[in-house]
Length: 366
Image (cartoon, rainbow, N blue to C red; front, top):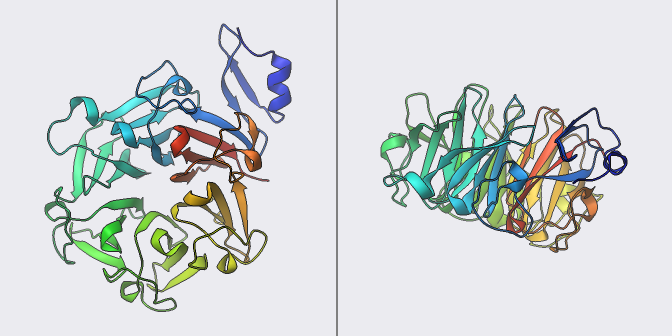
């Protein structure tokens, strides 16, 4: 009927709260040991769309974007199922949006990234749908923020909701509620101004690498993907350049903070600028502003970059794609093409283990 309590407590040393079902399985465990990887949604290597009685009994298909609100609710973009799910800290699951079942016009085609906006909304970047949406996190009601569904590039100054965009692959919101998105195939980071018009934050539209130390709007980036904002800095997974870039939103200056530009795996324990990344797809700043987590997709790892000193290390993933089990140390977990990473105010990191069709949670602090 379930694992003995002694085994559970042996695995979860720092438990502060345990809630039990009638069969003896823990539903909610708070205070996992730092570095312990726990599956919180999906079943490993079982793609599907069935919604179960809990998140770990619900099947996912290529999960990607993640974010958590201040109530501890995890939202995830179930990319292959064209839906958005909400997972509570108790493991309950709720479908927020499911466009594979009930949508016929202007539907989600490939939701790849999302962000909680702090006012009860979810911002969603739809790569193949060429749109950015805002969904009500409770009702699922939608408002189109940018894009028409056509894959084209629109000049600055155009009304975002009436203008084409190309392959939005990342989305973020700043403390003032302004929305930013990575327009992947236009090689730009765009924002929506208070009057609803588009403006470019970084990138000229030409694919390439250059411009560090100068204006981000005059710099070259290449297939930007996930983005995050913390402390007035916009962090960018510059996937095509195998680098992570940072834009100071006050000055507009862009710099590289990780990656050599050559795809590979190297550099742990050293300067991030001398470390090799391979197709980084998402970034997430820690709540304390001290670290940046990078979904290093083709290395099958999540890397951690210190924002206080020149240091990079592997946070999770051994580099082996074989699933290695649940409730294991982050360093030996087998990740496979992680596309999403998110942090929470509660000292947690969530990882979308995309090709294993699961989402992990692990505490920081190790």
